[in-house]
Image 1 (cartoon, helix red, strand yellow):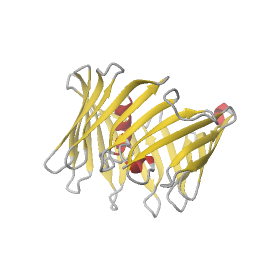
Image 2 (spheres, one colour; image 1 turned 45 degrees about the vertical axis):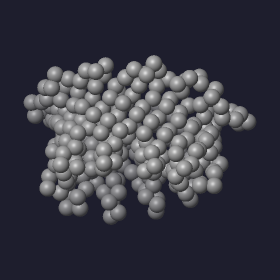
Image 3 (tube, helix red, strand yellow; image 1 turned 90 degrees about the vertical axis):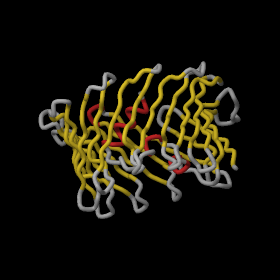
Length: 295
């Protein structure tokens, strides 16, 4: 399930303290400006206007700028939707996905302690528990242990986190329910505390490095994945506009002799939110149009 995978990625990357980050539930997560009430996305041909026939998604936000609902469409019909519920700290306490017939597809329940830190996450399908996670923190409110439990509440695995003197995540250790090492991930940063290398090892077969560089606006401009033999698995490069919209992405996959290049252009509204994005690749041109409703 997408939200569970994203949840694991969030913590593996050391972003545990940003408790809502994995939901992409704020206006800033979508790089939106102004008081957006809702907006819809449409997959259009060049001269085609947005309509119910080409709608893809609609996002709804509350007055504080937090996502409350997202609708997904297929051929002009509502296919499924997501709903978000918040507590007084504006942290997500419930995330629910619904099927086309409005029955629950799955849901996530987050529980917070008196210290306002996330203590437990439980995932459900068809009313039954599928798995859960618990979290423990140090005196600095940094996540130090995340435990994964299966649907029978048996321990499945454990993540342990350690930090450097700057408070940045330095190491993640993943072990099974018998404390056997599954993988160990270390992190390196530059002088601006930007992640420049992430190395994942199991001290047997896996030894993968992820290396990044950034521009002066802290946007990633190169992203390279390297295998155990120090051979490049993938290499990506990015170019951005002055307002941080991506203009070009280039990805090389050497072992497949493959190169993918996408070039982007935009049309903006008066709030500088793009209302048309055109992506040109070797195979096709994709146009997404957006319609905004502001407060």
